[in-house]
Amino acid sequence: MSENETKTVFRRLGLRIAKATLVTAVTGVLWLVLWLLISSLLADFPEYLALFAVLVWALLFFTFAIKVSEGTIYKYILIIMRGFFLIVYTAYATNCGVRTVKIEDFTLTVEFIPLLALMITINLLAIARGLLQAIEFTSQSPKD
Amino acid sequence: MRQTIRALGWIIAILWIITLLLPVTVAFSLMKLLEAKNIGTQEPTISFSNGNFTLSMPFYINNTGFYDLSDIGINIQMGKEKKTISAASTHLLNVPVGKKADSSLNFSFSLEELVLKDSELLTNDTELDMNASLHLRVAYAIAFEASMGFTTHWGVPFHNLTIYDIAYNSTTHVFSFFINFDNHASYPVNGTLTAKLYNSTNALIDSATQNVNVPSGESFQTSFAITIDDPSNMTHNGIIRLYFVDAQISEKEWTFP
Image (cartoon, rainbow over all chains, first blue to last red):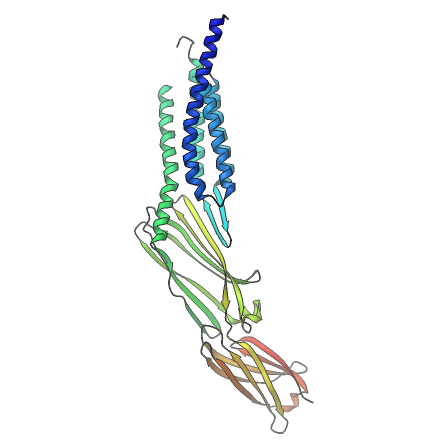
């Protein structure tokens, strides 16, 4: 590889990282706004804020990694991984769709199993979509 | 394949919109219900007659929200020191949007049941532990259950029940004594008060009955004079047992020289 080719590869990689950082930053700002809205509501429940924070950081990581791996098979692997992560994490964070909040002598239990089932279905569809995209990507010749 | 991928993309987007909008609209629907007092209770009615205690609490749900309410249930549990004394529950199947449903929660228990669980619930004022819970499902998808524990003052119908001035006239064979109590309950005490005399071998000597009607918050005093039909049963000591309707509410030992 000549020096010029190496420079081009580094420039492309740099551009890709810059683009991914920008997209991740924009996404991060949107999550931050949501965080600010939610944090006042959930100020008394730090454990829920912690669960939300883990979700946000994981999604930001996937956003960045998917953007960086654009044009490679890794992009679709990451999309499938994100789908699996969201299924497992939403089931864990929502205690399988039943959450209880206790404030002194008052207890509120919310059961949203149908909603969780819908979220899992969406992520399964996203995984299926990622698989199809991966198959389509691998079936394309370099010329395409 | 591209069209399938595109179709899947659209389906995923639509489903995400539904998934995110549903909880938000359900929350607004509930706020609409709670803000205008569309769920509430009416004045409870308490009655106490023939040894049966009945509490009826009417409640209503006026569904002004966006979604049907289903699987509605209300439970109230009354207990003392982690021991359940009585529980009541009611269940409504469905309240469609724009409709109002009325129902009532009914507590009913006999004095005998109450005495069996805790005899002091008739003679000593106490604080009872109450646990009320409301369960409802909105849009057939999201269920809420709110429960609250609180204490309530239990004013007893036979507070400070005392049997005193016990005497026996061996000439006339009249056994006499006084009883006294305060009705601290929020309902009148209405029924029959029976005194039974037992000798030292726990054999029934005689008994007498009086009708009582004591309004809420008032004191009551009465005397019993029981003429013993068979004085041979009489011993130097024994027990007086006091019954209200069929439930024993007190007993006191007596001894004569």
